[in-house]
Each structure stands twice: as C-alpha cells, then as structure tokens.
Image (cartoon, rainbow, N blue to C red; front, top):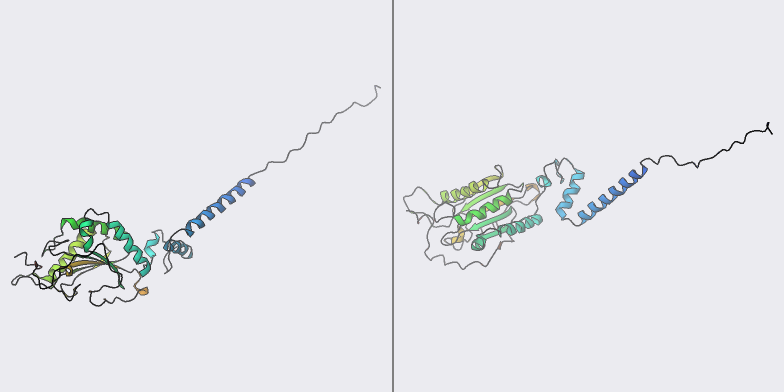
Length: 283
C-alpha cells in the first residue's frame, strides 16, 4: 500500500460571469431621451401657432438671418412677422394689460384700437374738457400718464417700429398768436413720445412723430367735435413686404375695420354748440 498514489481531491468553483460594464446606463439614457422627446412633442401640440412656427423655424434656420422664423440667440420675436391675424392677438393682449391701470375706468371710453392695413392703430381721444392733455396745451394730464406708461412697457417688448401722430379739431387759435393747431398736434405727439421712451419704448423704436393739425379729422361731418383731438400710436407690421400698402379708410381719418372701444361712447354735442377751443383757453 505504501506504493499507492495519494488521493488528490479537486474542488471546482462555479464560474461567474464577467463584469457587466455600463451597458444598462446606455439603455437608460436612451429611455430618458425618448421620454423627453415625447414631452416636447406633447408641449408643442398644446402650444399656440406662432410658438410652433418659431420652434420649427429655429431648426430650419438656427441663425434667424433668412426670412424663416428662427432665433439668433435673441429670442424669436426679433424675426417674427406680424400679420393681421396675430396683430389681433396683440390688440387683445394690450387691452388686457391696460385694464390694470388705476385710471382705466375713467379713460376707457376714449381708447380705440383698430387693426388697419398699416398695423395696429391705438387712438386716445379727448373729451370736451380734455382727457389726456390740458386744453390747448401739450402738457399731459396726470390721469393719462399711467396709461401711456403701461402702453410703453407693453409696446417696448415688441420688435415693431411705431409712429406717433397728433391731431386737433378745426377750431383755430386766437389771432395774433404765433402758435396754432400744427404746433399743438406735433407738440402733443412729441410729449407722448418723450414720456413713453422714458418708460419702455426703445430709442430706435419710434421712427416718426407726425403732427396733422385738423387735416385728418376723425369726424369730418363734425369738425369741432372733441374726439377729433387725439393722439395715435401705429404699431407697424414688421415686414412691410408681406402686408398691403396703407390706405386710410373713408370717413374716419385712417380707420379700417375692427375698431373697438371699451365702453359705450358718450353722446357728443352738436358741431355748432360752443366748446372750449384748442388754444382759446390760453390767451
């Protein structure tokens, strides 16, 4: 027995698989990416039309330098073309914003917004004893400043250019004065510009300040009516090539369809009834 071989016991250990690596992380990342894409699609389906166009335009033209909607890291508004359809939406947004003005209830019957071939026209009309300006003066009334500031804050967010116009009624100033309706209409438009550029309008946004005196009466059949005294703000379509040329509508000094006031307009006195003339209040 001494010459027998020793007994050798061999124990085999069960082999384990090698290290799995990070394959599961790749699969998880793909899953998260797919979920994010799904949520973006769902968000776009519930977004407004112009948001969908802006997002789609970015992928078509990331630099935003062509005529397609896009962004050049400055926001889609810089290249967004306002049409008559979305100008109506701008009108509604402005109407909502100015309702927050403390003096809105007092002024609402004298605010008129109209979508025209030129753009959105905002008109602030005067009452018989003055509303936005002192009688015969380019000095802004205190009650009107809050409204103009609110408009400036809202319009200053837009890329659009703006015209400001001043208008008077047909009542002349007293003889012997070196100041008349031409000067008054221009000075009032410029007073509004000065205040609004200090509260939101950009320095390069107002491209024209116009004074028309009584040459574009709001009510041609009543040239002395107080509503002829007004200032107008025209938010111009950004791309004039895609809009129709501006043609003032008949009878209302440049009004198109779609004009709207905030309340019932108060009855106006007959044209022949005496009223405080523009300029006569200041000798």
